[in-house]
Length: 400
Ligand SMILES: *Cc1c(COP(=O)(O)O)cnc(C)c1O
Image 1 (tube, rainbow, N blue to C red):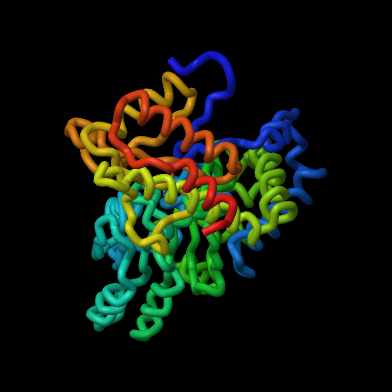
Image 2 (tube, rainbow, N blue to C red):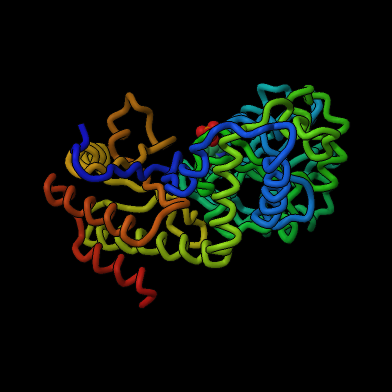
């Protein structure tokens, strides 16, 4: 049982903390869905969604979680028997590729384990496809399980360097609203997001963006069904077609408020800088904990290949499991489990955890998590290097 006093903090990589402003915007009677303010508000939402993704192309909203977003994208990308290149750097990349396989797409896997994808190997795989049958490259921007971040712009350049016509589809569910993302500049054709991570909303909305090229191909995709088909959603004749039926009313009010905070008030540059600063303070703490051979370590060695929204790490000898339990029971902080590192039935399962730092987070929340982790390490007598909180504070202050 977590403590009954004070606010508890769910510091996992989604669902994330929802701002009171967003909750309050959702707490209202249902609006008229035929006319009135929801119509104009929806137009504003789509305009801001495009600003958020850095695109002048098309945005769509589905009532679904991230897995639903994957399928919404896939149904509009492929016909049965089509070929794809699935680039995987963790459990989520693998999940999207396997969803495609189960839907009848012939996916060639290029698995980088828990390291960032090597664009050269993607280029080589496309070059080997001499009849140019691969229609899409699927890749995860930040894989929430490994916390690996892929260099999407470099992947696009590699694809172009071999003159292959494949389009690029990116799962940005964990990076949207956290890490810099530029759909058009980076040459992304299909982008998938979801509401419950950097977007600071409850789960329930899958967000999709399609380029003109991808939209044209969607017209030929025989996996598309009436509900999931993107065509009417981006070019509706009537308001209901944006959502294939009843709009997600209260979620739309929440999304409108969240986008106001993200795009209008904080601004994307400041928001990306904030996530970078908070992430670096967490990494600094881990560097200190991991000094003098404690075995505590981040999953991803290269800082450039680390997502700014989630951190996956190891505390050996079951330390992660014990620390998670202590934090929840004694401090009211819930950390994420390790995903894809070991099976729940294996002893090593207790060696891994993840911290979510996406969306509505600030310095005191991150220092609170790190401070309670430090207390837990001390209380449980888990060996750890000294000076983690000082290092985190220094990183937050911008001093190096
Ligand atoms: C969370 C997440 C998903 C899955 O989203 P659900 O809402 O849990 O279905 C997929 N991809 C990435 C990168 C994610 O972070």
